[in-house]
Amino acid sequence: MTGEQGVRAAARVAQIEAIKTTARELLIEKGAAGLSLREVAREMGLVSSALYRYFATRDELLTALIFDAYNDLGSAVERAAESNTGASTTVRWRNSCQAVRTWALAHPNEFALLYGTPIPGYNAPTGTIAAATRVATVFGSILNDDRAQKAELADGQGRDVRPFLSVSNLALVMPAVDPSDYLRGVMAWTHIFGHLTFELFGHLVGTVTSPDLAYAAVVDELTEWLRLGE
Amino acid sequence: MTGEQGVRAAARVAQIEAIKTTARELLIEKGAAGLSLREVAREMGLVSSALYRYFATRDELLTALIFDAYNDLGSAVERAAESNTGASTTVRWRNSCQAVRTWALAHPNEFALLYGTPIPGYNAPTGTIAAATRVATVFGSILNDDRAQKAELADGQGRDVRPFLSVSNLALVMPAVDPSDYLRGVMAWTHIFGHLTFELFGHLVGTVTSPDLAYAAVVDELTEWLRLGE
DNA sequence: ACAGAAACGAGAGCACTGCTCTTGCAATTG
DNA sequence: CAATTGCAAGAGCAGTGCTCTCGTTTCTGT
Image (cartoon, rainbow over all chains, first blue to last red; front, side, top):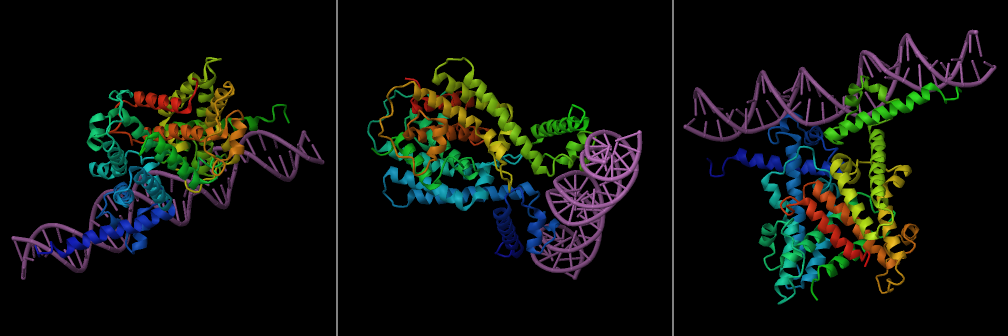
């Protein structure tokens, strides 16, 4: 070992990064379906077989891009939730929702890669799962903080969600939230992504005339529905 | 003309139907990404170039499948909404929601074709639009019938949706619904599809333990939220 | 009824894809 | 310094969508 863990090892991670960068550019231009290994190689002045030293298969490269995209989106939303330290849970929730949409509009093809049709036979590597849950964790934490600073809100009258939600998993993120509130939390989360999926995939054309305002109204409704702040 | 508009014309529509049927089988097996014209031809004992007499391009064949799938889903939901004639709007709404999910689970690859990542550069032919809106129209009609049989519910206190929803379009389907209720209607619609997209694309793994019960609970919440029946 | 036009399926071929295997060169290691 | 390992190049395979040409069959106008 040369103290630097080898010049070659460093070159290798640099090359992997270069490949991902080039692939990401092509992904942005042409979408996941149009991303070709050969074009990535061509763009880099390489021959296609050379890429197989770094990614065993095209799907493996795509998986790496998925991983990075989840983390990119996740950190963007985390930043939005934490900026304005000490802000109300309502403001943090609104900011987080806006951050998701802002990221999605700025990276439509990456959004589609994450939330569109899964690539056939794809099984998320365990590492990806953690990256994928970052946004949901932010949402959960905000709801948790909201409930934590309210002495009594859960009336215990809510629906019993134990038959269909993983209460143990959700409790890890939202220990202060009454389980009867989990369903609304999950629904707010699916609603945000469902709405953005519909918006980006064109299903709101003809119904929504101003996507910006519509999204803001949706977030408002969800805010009320979650009984944030108050 | 032979009174039958020609034997060949009949053979042509039969052939088109046969191609679509074969393509649909392959779509079911391998998903849209794995659907290959050559394999369709092979399966039919034809040579690939022969298919180009009927579909100018692979995307055109996919578009035909999309059209049929929209209509298949649409008629399934319409049937669910109209069965039990005279049923309450609540029951009709629940049945329609269940019909959407039942169809989606039975046709996952077709669902992904409709609501997953759009095929790049795809522009829905105008004919497809009508087919695509059938489900939304059913939902809208149910909400309309609900409000029509309630003398006074709209308090006029609701949000002004004119800045971001196409009130004119929505009024065509739901003339008896107060525009301030449009937003909730649209949100219920996007929620159902957002939830099913998440479920089918694997994003609920780890959160939902019983998809059936979870969906029923979601529909219940939406029913309350829409203030159906009462 | 017959000639011309149109539709059809077969086949060859082009440019492209993901992926494999071999070969020579360069860097790294003992 | 010798041997091993990592690397890029190149050829090649099987597959793709799509185009073009070529006989054959069917329809159509006169």
